[in-house]
Amino acid sequence: MTDQDVIVRRARIEDIPGLVASSASLFAEDGGTRDATLNVDWPRKHGEAAFTAALEDPARLVLVVDQGTRVVGHLTGAVTRPTERRLVTSATLLSMYVRPEHRRARAGTALVGEFLAWARREGAEEVEVTAYSANTDAIRFYERNGFTPQTVTLRQTL
Image 1: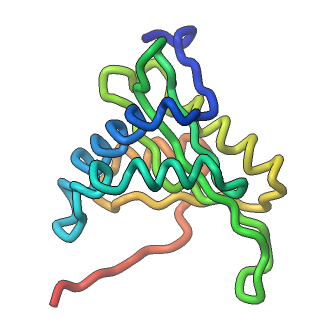
Image 2 (image 1 turned 180 degrees about the horizontal axis):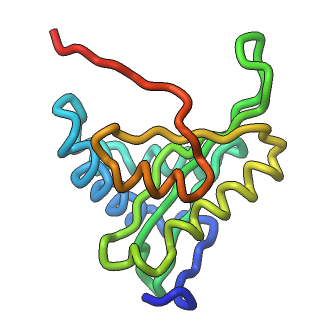
């Protein structure tokens, strides 16, 4: 896949099997290797219902990287309107994955660009994403795309 081959588009209902496979790969590669408490079977058991609901939710964004008839990556996001606690509209990049063999074609950058454009259209004043602290490649990627560190989550196993 080259830069010219990267097609990022809104997901459709027929993309759900590809979204489930992409999400399962994300769980296995990222969380599955960094978080022993993560249920790596979640995408296969619940992904179809979760992606179907996300596609129907106007406050959600579901994108795919399309390579003809195959989904080779995805991004999901959500927008949150102001509340008494948080006074701004915020967009959260919830999950993103691109198959390793397609990562140098700028597919991730294209996904993030579409997410940021969507967030602006939704009136978001800020965007956020989380990454495992041990996933230095993801952190560098997000920093290259304009994200800066904001919070740190500390955990203790009992």
